[in-house]
Length: 311
Image (tube, rainbow, N blue to C red; front, side, top):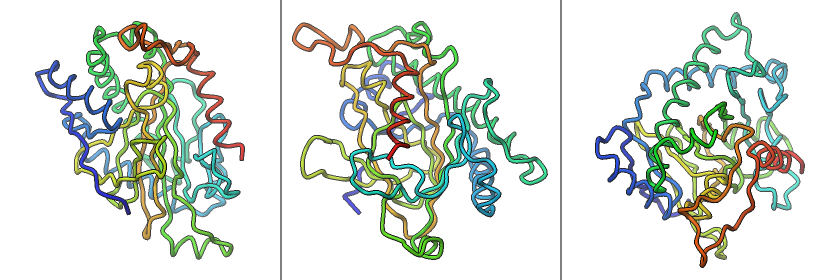
């Protein structure tokens, strides 16, 4: 493991929004990661999501494959994805996952109620709750970027945001030996940055998450990110980095292969599909011109997903 890193703590309920926005800005400039507390998500709901996630991943592989991923929704089996597209390894990451996308588009796949009672209702409740948290967080991020608090609403990012729950299970080393006779050590999630605006992560406390703050420096320095009870671990994504002209960091991160089973739940948010992501005026100047051309959210997202699944 690397050196442990204590991330900044951002209080979403603080009445001093300007001071909180300034602290948030510093966190996004320095680390691109922070803890979010007092977010309003009930601990009992989070606990129920983990219980339902564990029940699904405990099903026989035949049952899980009936809900195999289509339209970026559903189950992906062990080694099906490789997040580090630069890696020469021919094997994918040693994790399995389940994607739940926007609730309004009717593309999601759901386990049968008789197989997993309350599974769908729990995930739908969590999706709605997390989307509300992200909306509040984005207003604070807008303020930190010297924009009106409703900036992301005005540019259409929140019209029909492409928000995904990603349930994750990283089998422990002993389980991998049992599952795979040709086992070779891989990362639980290889080094990557997230594609969208912000990601909210909660884990079961089993260590493994690491970040690399200076991705262009060799050799890379990796630091452990411990979980914090009651807090989300939040990180900035690539589209937010584009919006801010690299002022905010979309930080490289990975998950080490855990010794015991590890579960986490990520809430990955992307702007509405037709939203144009382009450099903010407050983030560029004559001496610091825009580094990226404007791009439609859906086009950027589709290309990144294709690369992660085409290896």
